[in-house]
Length: 551
Image (cartoon, rainbow, N blue to C red; front, side, top):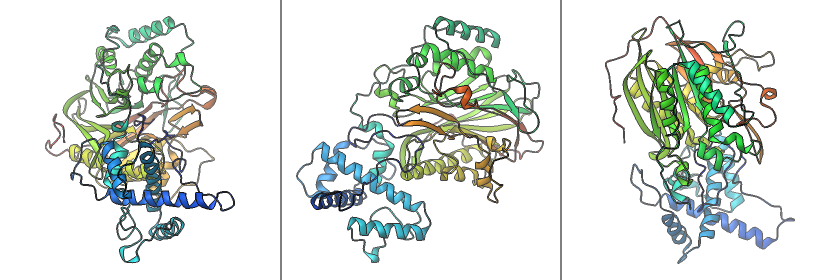
């Protein structure tokens, strides 16, 4: 699910699917028989102009670590100056920015290839566009490439444009308080009472809403019990839940679920279904994204012993929707009878030293039964398809790992989130190949089917082969979108995986997929039973993890 679905008025960029590779902002090429020569010359001229804009962006003065919004007026002035014009209109800026982004996308795609492949691709592009690239400066001179062409870094001004899409929205920014559930009371101290409350709420909607049934399945052995347990007797097992719950404001106004009945998106329907899913899973630790009704979750789960933290996005797209319930963000909750909070940390992720709109929320917890400490973190990386966004997610992943490693300070780690990246993307490998934390993906431990690919000698490829077929399955105007982009990562030296929550089949979901009257989000929750191993390295003395925010 995109976290940058706010209007992009200046760029005129249409939202794209979360995982459709090579499907947006392409430069269209036409044969000489299909396009008049004057039109071809005009097209090349536009691309040359956009390349000039892209190159000049690096000359723009920006602070070394820039957290400010990039004003659209600066883009307009830059375009006019680059092209030697006294002024340009919004339509010209929009067209040039689209083409500049398209060029940057091609350069990013080239940098994901081998160095030799990148050189050949860039050589072909320079001939195609009629752009002289001086050999003495290298093929990537002025375009963000280093001398070896192995790493493409987009111009900083373009990065500011990409990471702060909300700054370019034509809609006014309205930050409302989280108050839409103030009249709802779930003062029930028992799980059974909460379940009854949810059923009563659903009956009052006069809809066929009924939550899908799911079960925990052992990683090895026969299928587990139909319903997850509540209050595990085994104190060495920790159940972790990961779930993008779908922002109510975005789900109703921005996401365009064409096969979802309108009534199924009503908050009166989604609210009890969401609470049912949380309570049925009986997790010890809950990691959530796209939460824009945190107060309700806090009040509903508090009687069951949960305590939690919430961190909103700094420029949430929810705030550009008039009837919003405040910004969406990440939430982290834990059972207070099993854990105590030792420290917390909230941070903004940076992309090449530019602050993005994505956050990380982290807590250091003490497991009361064993006395062991662990670090739990959750995040929601940037959405949108293409090589450029893939590289940005990888940079966010690097920053995320740096933050988590620093605050874990040698403790075992649980890292979960909506990474908006398939296992084939670089950020998946970046997480698994972090040498310090030795992370593994919980769902890669699921049993392989008989028709699965043969085992790979590459551990990351082997892990990717074990991931579920999907963690999100929705239908939009452009068709079905079925992707694996949500993960629970854990320290393999500290935990083993006992059981995993299964996924409903396509037959169970029906042609409309999700969200629906059966399920309140377009992402499925993940649950993993992580067993503490007997031997865990002792954590070092408490480090930097505290309640303050890192700027």
